[in-house]
Length: 226
Image (cartoon, rainbow, N blue to C red):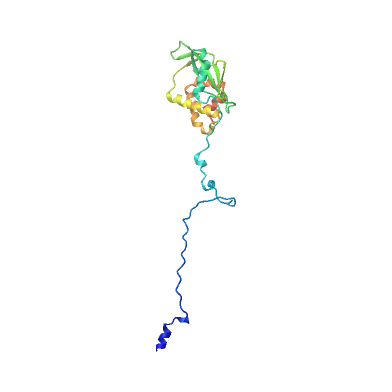
């Protein structure tokens, strides 16, 4: 009996069970970062430009510098016209800034100046003298002028002040024309702004007809640009 108990208390196989060793302490790695170090061997690694989405289209087309010019505003152009015809004195009716044809051959504006003399037919009615053409070179800021033949329809003219809206829209259209001549904007993005010409011509039908005979290519395009 004692022998059986002794045998039952011994571990099976007759081997002494060794104590289970404690697992070695595992070194905890430092917190990982995504720092990327480029090297000559990492040719396939993505660049910052590849990681960043292309937002060039969202920002719109790059600004257009255009041509360098001494005259790039309609106010400056009209000041040159006033100085050019100022020596003649008297009243004048000045056309909008125009181009002889479109596409224009050079960055030059054309103004037609109509000298006016008082008429007995009405307070706001004037006799029209010999018109003068004034060209303004936007690049070098110079002017050239020459007399023109009198038009059949422009013998007498009734001068009335345009509304503030018509004047403002025309000024915006004239400035747009300057920007087109100086290659600072595209025609496709200018149609709405050029509409000020059509509006002004509708209020000055006699002058529009006279200008159309002198510069049909430019005037007809300004009335309906395309």
